[in-house]
Image (cartoon, rainbow, N blue to C red; front, side, top):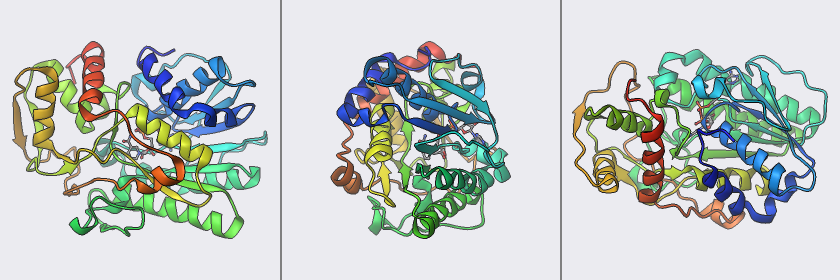
Amino acid sequence: MSDSLLQSDIAEIVAGLSETARRLSGKTVLLTGGRGFLGRYFTEVFVHLNEHVLDSPCRLVVLDNLITAGEEGSRMPDLPHVEFIRHDVIEPFKWDKPVDYVIHAAGIASPYYYRAYPVETLLVSTSGTRNMLELARLQQAHFTFFSSSEIYGNPDPKHVPTPESYRGNVACQGPRACYDESKRVGETLCYVFHDKYGTTVNTIRPFNVFGPGMQETDYRVLPNFASRIKSGHPLHVYGSGDQTRTFCYITDAMIGFLLTVLRGVPGETYNIGNPKPEICLLDLVKRIESVLGRKIEYDIIEYPDSYPADEPDRRCPDIRKAHVQLGFQPKVDLNEGLKRFLAWADGVYTGEH
Ligand SMILES: NC(=O)c1ccc[n+]([C@@H]2O[C@H](COP(=O)([O-])OP(=O)(O)OC[C@H]3O[C@@H](n4cnc5c(N)ncnc54)[C@H](O)[C@@H]3O)[C@@H](O)[C@H]2O)c1
């Protein structure tokens, strides 16, 4: 067990999957981006399932080029029934052994990194998705694509909470386009492979997942805040601080992701997130104060050059479809999730980034 993730959280994920997890017995899963934040959770959940739940072990093949995997992802130990292959999914991947599930989670997810690597961001969701779909088609494997809530762009307030049917309000040029537009193309590729070749696909649109295991150098909002808290410096809130988000604790998100992989209706797309509360960043700071029980200083600043401006004003998922079709229901409320994440980060982060 990697000490960067909480064992109790892994057990909570496995318990939340209950009997559905048995479908993985004896199967082979190919996971891209397996050394990233979510990928490391998938890996640990599979290891736990093999040890405690499955009659016959599930084999996991992890691909990652380590571009944003950081220290944590680069130094993962060997684990039983897990094979790591360093590979850039922008290049075709030859694999002639049987595969039952392909989970394409490789991506450049943090706005800080997609600002730094715009071409790589675009290609991993377009060429990378095409290569992995091709492999799933040849192997007749189930394919899951990690898209993003960002494909909705800056939604019209009439469409917040946002259902999967909303078509989005997105700019094809601008600092975020390399991410959101390429995820949209990735989704279209999934649609085409399903429609033309009958490949079994599901698409997941995660909404701001957080939890232990996020690297201090991730630069998404909660690791950013936790790192500043550790250093004793005021938090940096970008823009006005009025922009809203919802935050889904990792255990709930992982249950939603695995329910999609194992029970998703073929061809369907699911929002996975926690709609409550939709909270603006200034209120998020207040929430952190109440969880920590002390005053937290903050400054409202302009977007730094390293971070793409043009952020959506609001983001909140409508999760009724995932609830009805998959039985997905987040259980960890924001205060409890923040408590677990901030306690973990306090023990692991250095405050030096
Ligand atoms: N975590 C979230 O809240 C969230 C929200 C929306 C979408 N997503 C999507 O979910 C997926 C996983 O997110 P995450 O939070 O784990 O991100 P992450 O950045 O922590 O991990 C992504 C991993 O993909 C790898 N990678 C990037 N390009 C690659 C390539 N060309 N070939 C092989 N590996 C490559 C990176 O090295 C990294 O280890 C991403 O596709 C992301 O866009 C995540």
